Image 1 (cartoon, rainbow, N blue to C red):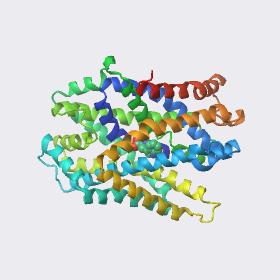
Image 2: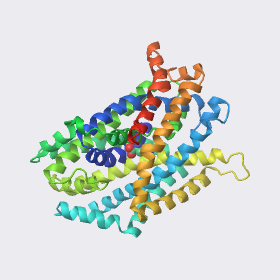
Image 3: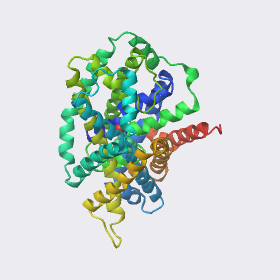
Image 4: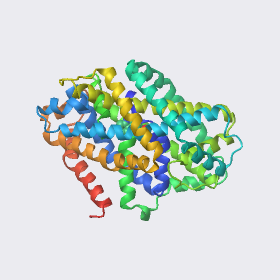
Length: 427
Ligand code: TRP
């Protein structure tokens, strides 16, 4: 449940629709689903395996399993990725909190699409306001890590996440009754294969890593806390199914609405923040549904930021452990929060920094991290360690284990390399 909470977040509801909209809808969806099968499944299992075998977070795991420092660069890569993701992720979480307060005071009532677009521009360029709403979730996340109430959050999200799903089903139902909604469904589900370009493939791969929280060591930590008897294969399948379902549902809500309201699907990062309020205007109990939805969205974002910040906090604790100035957990939370707030300020002040962090993490750093981890488990982990991932899976067939290792050794690294070179125009 915790891993699912980390996976399901703004990546599904904010990023997926806007990236899919910019990259041709149905064409993107096909490539995305292929990426989930090709990369998602083996890589989620890889991270769980590294954590479960080592019992450590991303900082200590590679050394523990390998006995030397040769793979330590991967931990640093994870740390860097987590900081950059947090830089822009908290800004978007801030937009959600802002929209929650505005839904509460009924700001969107009667606004049309132009007004909603203008409203987003006005809000997001209001620097002091955005700094306030960007820092707010940092304090909340830091608070959870500071007081170590992860467990409570997890229990809470067991009730709230299904509620988010129910809300989304209701919204999809309403949207599909709008005139012209079928055009949106066609856009989202009908693949025009000529639209599959190297960029589309790159973006789909990046989105797959981002949405499933892989390539950054977040799931290593979750693996470390996993009971030895937990079935890794099943857990991975469940996380993937849930995450993909939420992303698809977000597409089924956003695209029919986009076309019904005569809007442009390639609108960019503001897409869902313009379309969602317009959808609530069409619903029964408009006020209640918008407040409830944005509240649930904020909580979904927070369960993701907790997993993001945990990587950096654990890294700082363990990296400074044997130095002259060791940082305990709370000091690490403080140091991380300060660095993150500086990064948020950069993203709020410069749109281009926001875009760069988003792009670099998804299309360069996470694929690199994922490739490193696949090579590490495929080539450097002793056989016993590789088998460890299946310890709890009693009925698992030998050929399935062989397939897993084959994927990590050859398929995943080569596929990532090909996508890289392809998008650079080398191939
Ligand atoms: N997967 C989350 C989302 O879709 C974001 C996220 C949380 C993440 N933890 C992560 C992304 C670790 C990459 C790595 O919103």
